[in-house]
Image 1 (cartoon, one colour):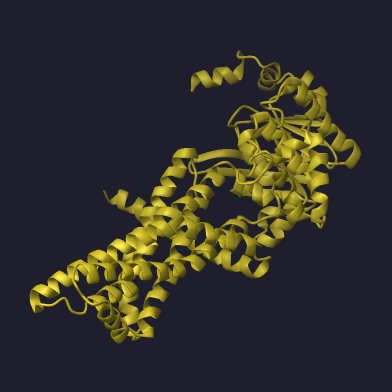
Image 2: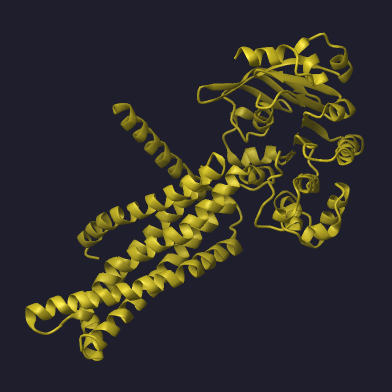
Length: 258
Length: 254
């Protein structure tokens, strides 16, 4: 059992070390080569288009269920479904927007990135890049990292909009809250720092998803089976890390008054 | 010239290369022979640091490339090399034409307007028509993929070309055309070639020198004539393609 724990820990540290080396190499190539602008924008668009529908749908229903739960619970305690807009917007903008978007991007675009780079690794296409004067970190990793970092905050914004819209539909048409009250509840109690809180999280989640998914892809070995393992590993790792990071980021950002 | 000294390569517990010593003469064709899985591909990958050697030296024009740490310096060394991969390693997301012209963008100053002409020329050189340029790699047969991959190597005019089984999967006529191409590149452009092959006919036709790799070591290095006349039972068996001999016996003992 101890040897199994030892093997697991050694594997974990080696992966963290590998991913850190990849990030270091990415920073190096960012300043020592031509930036693949076209590729980065293309990746951002692909990631955005792939994930937009699922983000919109999950956020819409999350906003709806939040409004329903909050409205019913508050209604049972106070008699009226008050502050539904505040609860929905706070939950979404500070927590669920970035988290849901991160989870969807991991499963949708993150998996695709790992599978694509992983397939390139096992079919020697990554080696071919080296022989044709191109560093794979510069050509594959940096544009995808930028793609995630550019797209994630925008998708988070859409997630917030769709979630608040879902909450509005339930609050107005199921709970009977007047539309203006719903929006006044949001604008009265929310400040710029709440948006910053969600934005900082979405940016850091994007960086983490890009790093994990690209690293898992580039370190893939062992043919089609290896690609499958890397892809599953990337999705599981990113989703777990999103939830763990979310707690610590909330604690840190709140301590800084954000 | 490339000189390999006491090269060792280990993957986990498995030692693939054990003290390999080999000289690759400039402007000559050196064929590397050996059974499947004996480390031939690993050896040529070490020559351009696609694999890092466990120990030993690889001198390229007198400079030990195993000691190079800088990615930029490594890229500068790799510029002089072309590598034909065993399975072609074409980029799936690009057309054949984009694959062939890929290196031009990163390794040369050739203007983009010249790319279609170069693609046409290099495809013709490996016996492919220009309309192949618009196909995706998934639409090609194994042999065609290999030829496109060779066209991609040729497009950037490297000084040294490392071929990993260039004729495997090709029909005998096309194999001979590729062999002629290797000889042509040597005669006209002075290209140094290192060719991993199992095709004895091709090896004897193109090689100036042959190295036989067995159990991680170079068992015999010499001219094709020396290989034909050798008494070494391992080499003899391999050259004759016989299932009877010391290599088979060794396998049976294991």
